Length: 588
Image 1 (cartoon, rainbow, N blue to C red):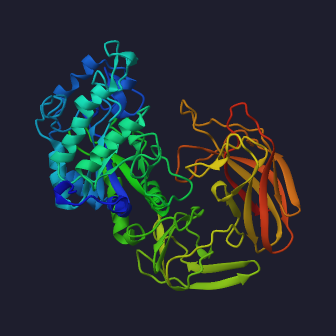
Image 2: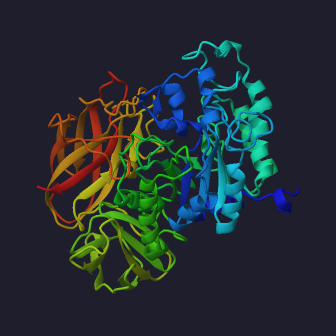
Image 3: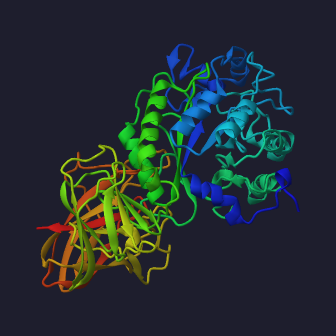
């Protein structure tokens, strides 16, 4: 069977290969919502800009008047794609239709589109397709397949803010699929050349049957095009793994995955949103995501005139300049070399190379443990300056130790990269140890032990143990101690994401025991001090970390120890259980 442009149907791995290699992409949220720029009838509206219709409760009859004002005369497809290419991005995902139902291309099956309903009279997707071909980027389309606030049978506001809209019992979703959604996806797949990805969003309660219709449609028309995981809430449907908006897993994932993220707090343009992330933070997120095996899809929200905000352009330029010198540590590398991101930054590599990405620069001697490959040379990647090093093997306990003598000042205040020439494919033993600082025992590194039955305790998709509701379950780690003595222990737990998105959904009062050999300490999970100590993980702003002091453990001699965390009592008032992020064992 022949596919798009005469190409044969691919296997899944062939289909996903470009995505694995791309690493970095530009998300573009652009639609008629940019015309309002976050305000309605003279009032600033809370919430993300592209959903102003919902947040401001704008009736459809009023919202339908917006396209008549939308005329992005400063839109320049070449300029947009140039900005993305110069930033080091390899693909672009743009909103062909968002939840408001307005098509940002010339749709023949619905006149509610930028050519027929707006004075612009041009198809920006056609122009972007040509520009992407010119500059060598993959063009991808975002399409809101379940939500459509304009179509009477789409998953709409259902009368919640607009009484004229049919309620759920009067809607037939399949009518919307057959009349608008499926035909529009077909238009995008046959009218704009090769498409890299159809980025479906917000599946809600979409059935597996209908989700597969959306997925199979893409593969049938363009076999090399991949489909986002948000086509369905069933993780078995879709071509790769996706996490929540701005969410980064705490552990590496060997499957292809992607995080979509904002530069400020909104996706669609809001004139009032000035909470811009620093270039340093964006670069560190890029390093962290790639080191965990993922892709970073970074958003821009162009204005109603068709310009990417200067704050976005400035930040992308900084990232691009960094990648010009350090791109070898991002492209054509493997993530997943470490399941746990190191405290000081991130690690990537490939056969013959290992790259250490430093967010916190350890001036002077720096110790890396667990690397068994012989190191031939070390250098600053951006400058090419060689770095003195020493490599040895400790015998009790057995441990590979590499010591680098680093300059006193970081070459780059955001991310400084050390390139190691090594023999073979990188091999790093991640067994926790004290040779390079405090012992860090992450939740996802633990073995789940015990006889707990209901519900089953497991390591969740983001790397946090879930369903610890049974005192018969416990966590176990193996630890290598090179400098025996007494260690102060501290437990860090995650807050849960509450259904109403409040960030402090957490439950304490669990009575736990932490033990190592003959040493044990009993403690109660409590937030102390009560305020001021919460923090966010370095690369994730979905949860907060809460520290709880445990006590002290004794390790009387060098060697390998088993550390266990057990429960004597678990609190169920909120039904959460302890969300173990990590246990840290540091000097007394």
